[in-house]
Length: 197
Image (cartoon, rainbow, N blue to C red):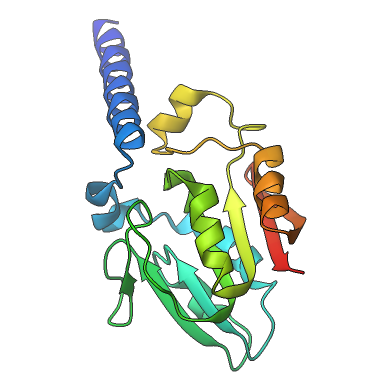
């Protein structure tokens, strides 16, 4: 009985520490390098979400993926696609190392930019999408919207530093004068597509 109580307390303390740590990352707009440097944080169950987004990409496209983790998008592209990837750390020899919470560099011009399970870890999603809009015809993204994932403490425990609703995402598209469409739901997360008009 005592061991169960101690385990419960230990779990509460760990979650509270994690929530406070991520809250500080959010306040200062700092990326969690420690987390993304570990390969055990690259969950294979996330692959399905990336494959759903890959189904939107047409053959012969140029594609830039942010946060490629295990390079699943690259393996699921249609024929004759040119693929670029960017992450906070090198995933392969061709990775463009970019911290999305710092000043953003010029990007290669592409047909599609893909964010699968990335934008929750970005402080200023609006600024990032606006920047990417200059370099791409279409943006494919997933997001754990606050309409479904509303508990802020749980969002911080998950490592998420941005908190957007479906309406917030629609507003980003509207402000950029982009068409937007809802694609699918994956484990409560929403998948969207933004296209230049």
